[in-house]
Length: 164
Picture 1 (cartoon, rainbow, N blue to C red):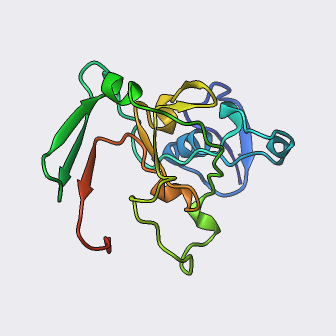
Picture 2 (cartoon, rainbow, N blue to C red; picture 1 turned 135 degrees about the horizontal axis):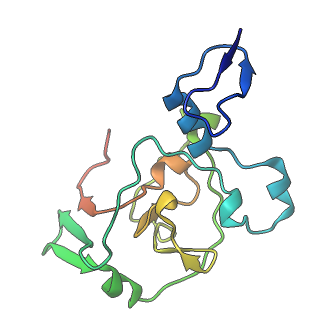
């Protein structure tokens, strides 16, 4: 079936194949896999990272943002971005992989108390871009990308493993 693409810059463009909604077309452009050519780099440039965003990218004012830490702690804590950046930091090369590649039998399941779990505010030496979780993202090396929480606002310490 040939039809016009709705709301496209090239409105006269015709597509062969199944009908796609404008929302599906927007998601296809918004979410993308890493191109095979990116494997030539030791460290993947930001523009070549795979990207999967299910919901809207929040508009975060870094001056108003804070990370809340609560749950099973002696005293709850709130840290703004500058307080987090003032703490000791490390640089670590980490592989992010889409959970769509399978995760059901991965063991052990991560616990956030592992030393290599990071709070990331930068990527490749640059500030973390909004689509990758600005202002703060949780990085869990050895676990699929779905565990690398974007737009982190809080951490709740629990006594037992989380089953959710």
